[in-house]
Amino acid sequence: MEIHNYSPQTGEYLGASVARPDPLEDGRYLVPANATTESPPSVKDFEVAVYNNGWAVKKDYRGVKYWDTDKNQYEIKDIDEVVPEGYISVAPPEGDVKWGGTSWVKSPPTPQQVNIERSRRLVEGSTISVTSYGEIPVQGRDQDQITILALEASAKDLKAAGVTTAAIPFRDRDNGSHMLTPDQTIELMAKAKQYAQAIYQASWALKDMTKIPEDYKDDKWWP
Image (cartoon, rainbow, N blue to C red; front, side, top):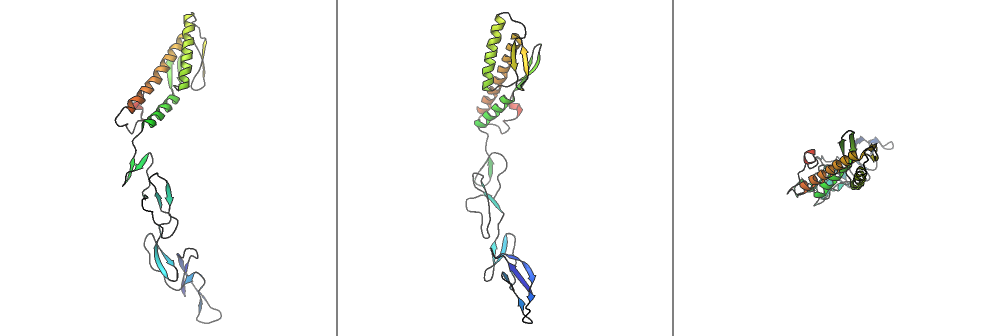
């Protein structure tokens, strides 16, 4: 005889099996706990048959994820649980998006994001070619600007004193050491300041736009 098994915790249908004959009474079968001879109803997608003194069809969205408007993710854990009213069943795409009422909408870039990109580029720095010396990698952070001003002043003092030999040490972006003449130092510092200033001007131009372009990180907007 076929019997139908259900979960002792949730009552959900687990599958059919064959009942064992009762060894004490011919023609009788043993129906164990959490089983019934009553056939379960058919179910569709996102439904489950549940036994509780009889079969019933209930919603089954377990495993389905949903989100709030802040993009926090939740998951349905229980039978008959549904996505709560006001929550979103569509996964937010990658990137900076917000819920627009009917769909996720990509948020326009902000001036703060432009500032972050500006700082990244200043930290990344640039490689500057110095006359009669070669290329030197530099950075344009605020602390670097202070160093640049100090070295530039020292180089001008040494040049005014008639020094023409390599007398000014400089530690570059990649921690390399250089010994430069006053003229080379003045040239390097001037170009480094020009580079940093160009980065700042590019960021200001982006932030002055009516709408900051989504590809504001592209090199075409930066020197």
